[in-house]
Amino acid sequence: MSQHSGAKPAQPAVAQANEQVTSRFPFDDTQDLADARRGFLGTASDDVIRDRAGRSVWDLGAYGFLDQDCPDTANPSLWRQSRLCSDHGLFQVTEGIYQIRGFDLSNMTLVEGDRGVFVIDPLLCAETAAAGLALYRSHRGQRPVTGVLYTHSHVDHFGGVRGVVGEQELTDGVPVLAPQGFLEHAVSENVYAGTAMGRRAAYMYGAALPKGGSGQIGAGLGLTTSTGAVGLIPPTADITRTGQAETVDGIRMVFQLTPGTEAPAELNIHFPDHAALCMAENATHNLHNLLTLRGAEVRNPRVWARYLTQAVELFAGASDVVFASHHWPTWGRERLTVFLTQQRDLYAYLHDQTLRMLNQGMTALEIAEALQMPPALERAWHTHGYYGSVSHNAKAVYQRYLGWFDGNPAHLWEHPPVEAARRYVDFMGGADDVVRRARESFDAGDHRWVAQVLDHVLFAHPDHADARALQADALEQLGYGSENGTWRNLYLTGALELRHGSVGTPTVTASPDVLAALTLDQLFDALAIRIDGPRCWDANITVRWNINGKDPITLTLHNGVLTHTSAIGPATPHPHLDITLEEADLRDLLLGTSSPTDLQARPGIRIAGDPGKLEELLGYLAAPDPDFAIVTP
Picture 1: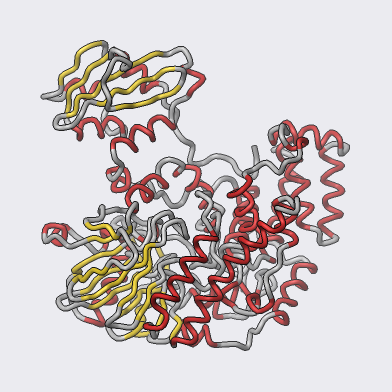
Picture 2: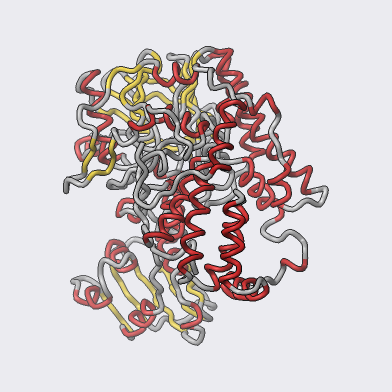
């Protein structure tokens, strides 16, 4: 198996540790392999899925190398998981329920109704979703899409909707179902902190890494993210309570609402006529994230565990198969009940034991090192930390309850990274001496310490060539040894950028559809996030927007803070500028597709006051940087 350009071999300590993994876990257990291949009907004839310009957005054949034996540059447990995730095609789950797997990070589920097919979670981009639907139709006939359901508010579960729903379906009023709160969370996550999340996701999913034994081999939850067109069609119906039943195209569904678990808005679905249970992303074949490494709100493992208990109580006794929006199904009531209860115990144990230790005075770092899972759970493959990890999930629980501060006053007012790094390196004898000693640690196999100490050198002297090269080597070795797919991708992408420069943000989720779904409140909030406060401490600007058919909105910049209100009273400042316009015109301005000058030229728009105030206000907006540095200052 060839290595990609710049990759180094596995160091002896890493190769030996990877070899020992094979004796720790039951690699002779092939049940998952049988389940992952069960019901296979066929796959696409063309490996490459392309966009309209001919650019590849997904390559079905890119992970064929996983059929080979695991090299010493990869953890055999992660290799096994990635091999299972690499099976692609159309699979029958049970009579009338099918899944497209391996066409994106997530799965698309298709449930046959009286007239057509009901689509659940249409992948991340339109191109992969369309290819998946075409594969389904090639086996099951040209059934129309008669409904869509988003199980939760993460983009890989709704972004491909325009690949399965066209203008005709929209005209026909095809229903789009989602859990209550879906739209708010789906759009805010991809806009408010979307630039930072997207850049960090480039590390987490390793989309820019070469595929291969020394490069990207998956992300645990799936392989990686597709890079096509992200869309969003707002839901037409909300699921608001557990026990709510809906029938679409003759398909009966009973819902369990699970907010605050894997997503702020999420649900599970029972299909009583199929004895099938869809667990969305609440129970998959790995330990999930309580705080995803790309960044998000900390999830609640206590609530997560309780909803899994409720799912067992409500549905396990009436289900013959459980499936999810990632990975492969589990068949048989006894097996699926064990699967769900072990998943429940996983999150409950993480929560309870972290709380026990933090109440004994242990810090997040100490808990992450000390916490061990029960042997019975560790023996189950689906509890392994391929995507989430015990280490960073324990830190997330700590963060949820106590925040970033560990109580030690020495950590209350530390220097920021660059200033601290300069002082550390000076204390340690200078950059050259630190690199010399770090090389000794590298040769001794202590790559974790090398990465920690050389981080100081790079933040003090980012152009130190020897430090960059050795840090890249250390991160690479840490990646080779990681069982967690996202840890591997983070380490290897860090090494890649140190050697070759920034990879930027390969997948952009704040698409026109997502932006169009923002409410005006969310749009103004998104604008406020971009205000460069120090530049406008002394500015005082008020603009009133009179939107036809809506209450006026007063926008005020004061003390570097942009606020908005629909109330008008004695405390509302007199506007410097009063603008009457349609909501579409306001959206164009706030989204940057038209300028204040364009606005003034449009017929029907009335402007009273000083137009220069609007120019001034917009001039205080700072552009986000989708290419910001991560492994260097």
